[in-house]
Length: 69
Image (cartoon, rainbow, N blue to C red):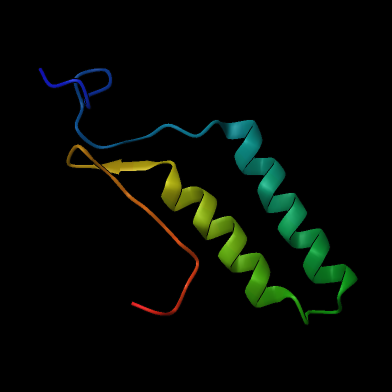
C-alpha cells in the first residue's frame, strides 16, 4: 500500500464537512452582498477549495485559479 492511500482507497476527499459548508456560505454571502457581481470569484473560491482537497487515483488535484496554461 502506497503512502498516498487513505483507508485503502486511492481516490478520496480530505476536506471536512464544516469547512465545506463554511466556504459555501461565504461564497453565497459574497454573491448576495455584491448583487451577483462577484459570483464568478465566488465560484472560483469554492471550486478551488474542493479541488485542492481531492485525491484521484492517488494523485492530489491542484487548482491555481488561473485561466492561463
